[in-house]
Amino acid sequence: MAGDKMPKFDGETVLELRTYHAAPGKLDALLTRFRDHTCGLFTKHGMASVCYWVPAENPDNLLVYLLAFPDMDSRNKSWKEFSKDPDWKKAAAESQRDGKLVEKVDQLFLIPTDFAEGFGVPFAGDAERLFEMRTYTATEGELASLDSRFRDHTLTLFKRHGITNLGYFHLSPDQPGAENTLLYFIAHKDAEAAKKSWEDFRNDRDWVAVKKASEEKAGGSLTVEGGVKSLYLKPTDFSPVR
Image 1 (tube, rainbow, N blue to C red):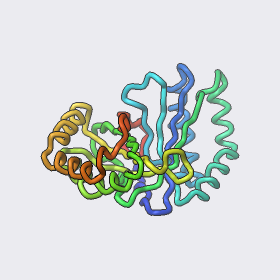
Image 2 (image 1 turned 30 degrees about the vertical axis):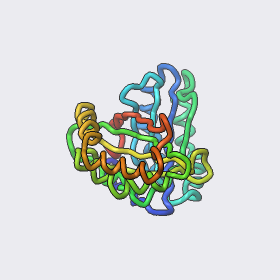
Image 3 (image 1 turned 180 degrees about the vertical axis):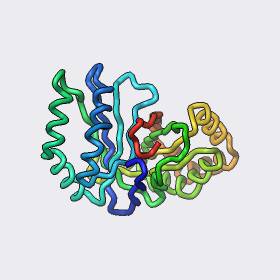
Image 4 (image 1 turned 135 degrees about the vertical axis):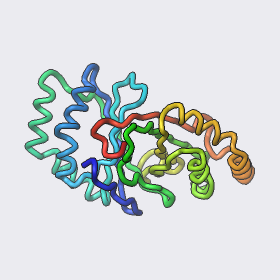
């Protein structure tokens, strides 16, 4: 799986972002089940693994991962077949002999923006990168303006300052917040590089000018107060993209 190319995102692509809250003391067992069984079974049933992560600071014992499907019908069919697979049932039962591994699962369905870079091919370097998932809540009616700022300026400025653009997404229309949410993934060399890149980006005169112009046009900030959330993520050893 590690050598596979990531699926090309288009207007029909559906990505499923899943966050597993492992039971206390069970995160390692959950990761082992994914490494030894789940990922292979996902592939068997046509589910394209994009990335698997754990937060850089993980007090809540989370596993975060991203799957890609050609469309929602394909997604539903794949999950149905996976859940009925005897090999999955056996692996799940054996892994939970001493108690359940997962207390809760959160999911979001993501649709690529027209400026989604995609995750490309797996990273060829020796060192693992530090990933960052960022969620923006746009002010009412300004998601399109926020998209335009990213499309026309921000992505290029990120590259200027050593930030790797990965996927940029909206929520599928049937989900809460779909009308004002932009969720995206970027990558850094490491934590020190991330800190420097963000400092340099925020001090970039071009960014300052772009931000000012976009806010003057909108009559205020393009995001609500407290509407930018960031989570740093480390790839697992079995993640296709690292």
